[in-house]
Length: 314
Image 1 (tube, rainbow, N blue to C red):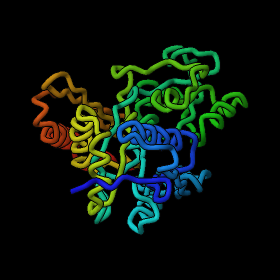
Image 2: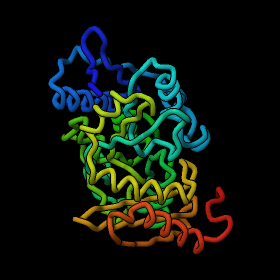
Image 3: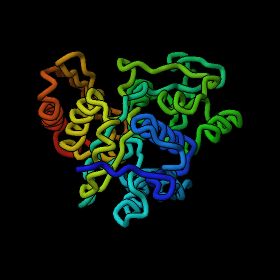
């Protein structure tokens, strides 16, 4: 089969959210496709789509309903043919795609860890007793309260600039952002302390850009195969299998990180009660060919240890 490439007259339409970070990720995808197939900028068109998660800023992600908040409207346009591919932050994605769509292209992973942000650049360990931390992430809140139950954690949503302004306005003493987002946006001047895996495991799939397509689109499938990063894909196979077995969503505090070293995958995982009162962790390694099985096995073991009602809201 001859591959039909996009042209300025018939551009490939890239669907994305309209946030600065989402646009940067769509532009990275476009740049990689341009380089891989020697195509001009005009052979692509970035189409911004407003999602429910972007539109509703005055309610927590938990109240809005978990996964799909930042993808459903884009997936609808992908299914209707209004866009040809969809670029996502993988950590925002459901482990299940709508019929007719597939998420099988992963770009090389950026730094997967969290960044702890204070205006004076102080680390988490130096936060004073009773300090206020802003975060919209249930995982971060539970992890933080598990280590520092003296802290106050308040709802904190918005762009990087919005969150920094809230710190300036003394709404909170500190917040968290993803290192990957800061790096992709070039925010080198934002004071931050990288949070290690030993301090706080990141969200499953944090730092990974994924590209969704229609199952039936053979030309797009062939183009995207040139972008897929095998090592990141193996890590995602492990982490997303872990998440699937846990039935994870934005309403469940789950963390996980798979790292590939040669032919071995190491998975570190954590589940927490929503109030941070209990944390269960595990650490497993095995052949990379068994990445998905390792994710499922760890999740099964953690669920057995947790027992009924572990994730109940408190």
